[in-house]
Image (cartoon, rainbow, N blue to C red; front, side):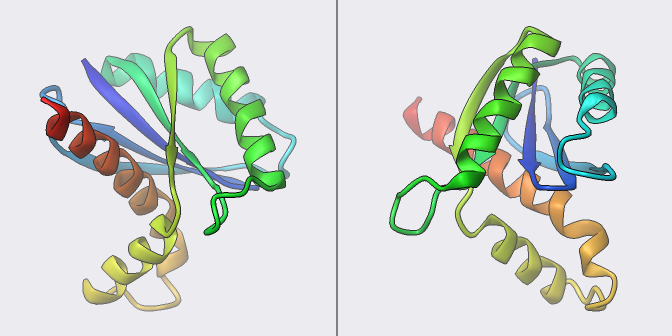
Amino acid sequence: MKIMGLDYGSVTVGVAISDSMQLTAQPVEVITRKSENKLRRTLARIEELVAQHGVGKIVLGLPVNMNYSEGDRVERTKEFMDKLIARTGLEVVLWDERLSTVSAMDVLKEGGVRSCDRKKYVDKIAASIILQGYLDSVQNRK
């Protein structure tokens, strides 16, 4: 079984998928929508990717504040989680995503990606960082 990682944003969703042994996360794509509330196509694309890759679980980044408080984005992410569960029927695990976007930007910068091109990739790299953190924690518990 593979696991999907999602970095949910106001108009984009970064997607990453694990290998079947659940050891590594690979960035897959960035799903873009016209506005925050337009989720029908986003959910349909996630459902397609779940079927295509044989995904059995979803890890969704939870944007808690640096002081562990929960803001408006956390509430919207939890609402998105409910829609994901209803649409896919899969277990959705919330995972602390603090600094994942900063880390993704650092990876892209170190990889020599031009600053004007980084926005195209940052969300799927952030999704892979979120998913890799989850995968590593599961491996460490074993």
